[in-house]
Image 1: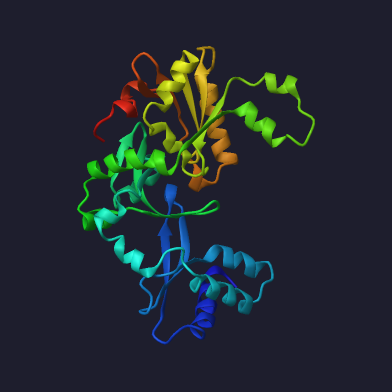
Image 2: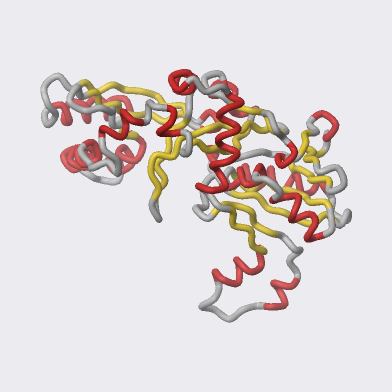
Length: 314
């Protein structure tokens, strides 16, 4: 059974368990970096929201031997699962005053998201884009968010400038930074084994910048004074390696590094190890301490931008 016939079979199986009049729509959802995920949209007039079920994990279970009945019951559990917020709160989110403290931003690739950026408000940052989302709920294990599209911003009557102003204030509060030396993170991960101090000492003073939740942590680059203070602490310029949309690596720039080799390393890791949806950039970036500015290497003159702490408008 191929993917298309699997959808048809699952639709038939689910329809027998859903209320009469419920519609099941096959929809392709555009995610980060042009990744498209096939999904089922459940349209039930009795619900104030439309549950979305992604097909790929269910199809994988089917190929692994799960029966259609088992998959159907799993999908039904997803449809009827209890949300961490009430239907009334969803209606409340249509009011600007109810959501202004929930608006945050994240960094994504500008070149890989051309189609998505046509439908959402965004702000340029180097060769990347600052996009906005609404944090609906947060637990220790889960972050429930929704991307802010132009139609939603229009409903609130928020301009891109206003979204940026709110997100600049909210994001560091909702997603506090985590900045730690890479060698200490490696030591923590190996705490149950015998440490290898000699090997650890060979590492350059690389720091990992993310947020405490560990998701979309590359946006910490935009937090006020974070990179500026790190550069002052290290008394140097800073090389920024975009590990993923979730974190970046900071290296004090002693001007002995081969930038092109670092760039090729980022590209190789992106190609071999980072899921496409999580890739941030194939370039490397420099923070110039004396001018408080970010630059893209190797063509910084085309992409100069003041540091976020000096930026008052997008």
